[in-house]
Amino acid sequence: MDLLEKNPHELKLKGQKLSDTYSILALNKTSQLVEFGLSHNALTKLEFDSEYQFNKLKVLDASHNLIDSVIFDLKRLEVLNLSHNKLRDIPSMNFCPSLKILDLSHNDITKLALHNIEKCENRIQELNLAANMIEFKCNRAYNRA
Image (cartoon, rainbow, N blue to C red):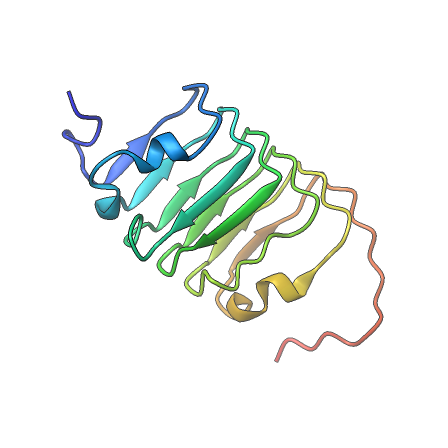
């Protein structure tokens, strides 16, 4: 049975020992997904292109993986959970203009690189950076007007 047959808008692949996104991209109908769960796998990077896949995606949970690299262009993404991964920096979310909730807790982030979320800063309602070892240095005034 096709994984997307029951609910073509939601797919949860929790704990499937996935190590890359290439096998996921082979699934048909990914352009219809609204909610996608990839938690508790062995992913080391996330690479998606909304032009061809995931163009309706609003919720992505990739928590509890080994992710250290994130590259995607998800225009409609509203909720992104990347907690419990291996990220060293705040990934660029400038290609996710609809983002409202971003969870980066429990990673290896040490620098507060706010320029990576500049284009969606007025829309982000919740940013979770708990349990990171962030060293904060202010070289210039950051004005959120």
